[in-house]
Length: 76
Image (tube, rainbow, N blue to C red):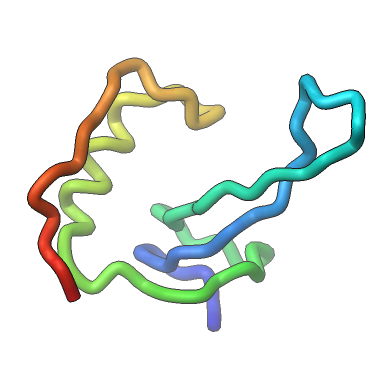
């Protein structure tokens, strides 16, 4: 599955402050096509506009400048 806008994936990453070499995972939502990103397991089918709005409240590294609470999000 290609990493196109709205794709959802997971990325394994080393925890920077961990001396034991443990790894963690981060969910990623692709906002710009990234052919090199291969950990895709789904796509956003509704609400990409909300993701775009939230993405404007962060820096280029992805660090948010505000806190967000997602509530009453519904069920599939």
